[in-house]
Image (cartoon, rainbow, N blue to C red):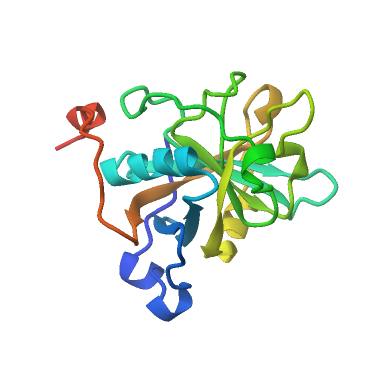
Length: 213
């Protein structure tokens, strides 16, 4: 699989003054990507289970070496939509499932710059894949008869990077993802917790056994 060349992290990481400081009830995570850094703030108060799941992937290093692989652009306005990244279907990296925290309970809507969990048909099938929105995506919110997706925080720095990834050439894919697979996926070099101490899960890091030495 071809990926974009990695940018020098010394250049890509923004100055501390450009990243909003910590706020009560949130934990910040920086994603160092091949297109530049993205910083998200996870809402630990309103979406505790979803945020804890994401942090488990971060603290275990399960996102390190994965990619942003999907750019879903709006038909009417291709500058809006979302990008999707994470472990894809890598069973070696996945952690146990957890219960869905719908927007109807958390109150975290899918507005511009929202981070939310991708999932399959089952409401509680979210795991190691996530999306970052560009512009509001209310179709992802819960409503009567539809569980929606679990929004759990917001991008607080690096939306310019998110928009650049959204604009990358795409194609391939099937069904809902038809035409949306990024032709040259963007590496997620590493994901770093900025607040508090890492709390690794202790689950086996099986994918490490398959890495080239």
